[in-house]
Image (cartoon, rainbow, N blue to C red; front, side, top):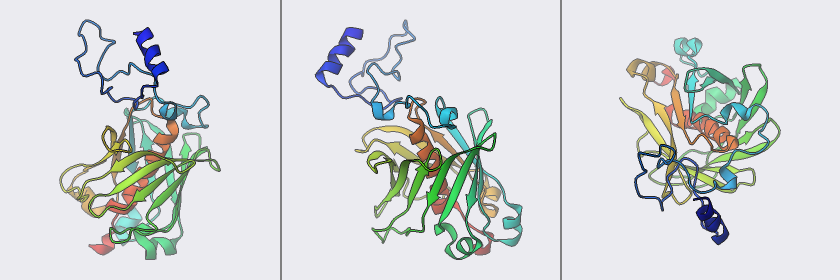
Amino acid sequence: MASKDAQNQRRGLPSFLPGAPDPDQNLPASSSNPGNQAWQLSRPLPRSFLPTVSLPPGLEYLSQLDLIIIHQQVELLGMILGTETSNKYEIKNSLGQRIYFAVEESICFNRTFCSTLRSCTLRITDNSGREVITVNRPLRCNSCWCPCYLQELEIQAPPGTIVGYVAQKWDPFLPKFTIQNANKEDILKIVGPCATCGCFGDVNFEVKTINEKLTIGKISKYWSGFVNDVFTNADNFGIHVPADLDVTVKAAMIGACFLFDFMFFEHSLAGL
């Protein structure tokens, strides 16, 4: 097997995304060899998707996670007054342990008059209070009728060092986004459903390769019950990705969750 892999590398055969089955390996794995399961890669991972040798400070928490849970905190003041307050999020691992805390920074004028389109900065800190990720969101359009100046996020990790972007792509039917590296080169694509209302069920955004032929994960907005969905802004998200995905790409997906919350799931009691 080792010699075969070496031959494949010398021939320049393509590698595939971490966590996804090799399309050439369609035969079922032998039950006598538990280490040869279908989900394991038999070829080297693409370097652009492997964890970086030197991780950005604070992102080591993400290096082995294949599930990231994001829980928006309930703002009682917003519930009572029907006003828009700064969002706060807890970011947890699959065991429910908090690894980060995110706080929105925005001015009252933007929250009141620009509502969910508002420009803002989300600062993500670890449990020691150190800021490890900064997400910048400028004021942009959000309409299927407007193909220009669409939504975009800038991801910094650590603060001051740009590691990626989340950019909306125009599509008349489906919400589509791309995750880009620091040079604004497309890495992955995120495709949402036609209807994002999430009535009595989860809403899933599939994470795909650029050609949309292979799905490697998903971002889910979990349905939290009728009362929660109608009377509060508290949303719960889950990011399902391969554990060996680059931590900067995982950081960009956390930013994508915030963007989806603003665009599709945030509402105010003032509008009821």
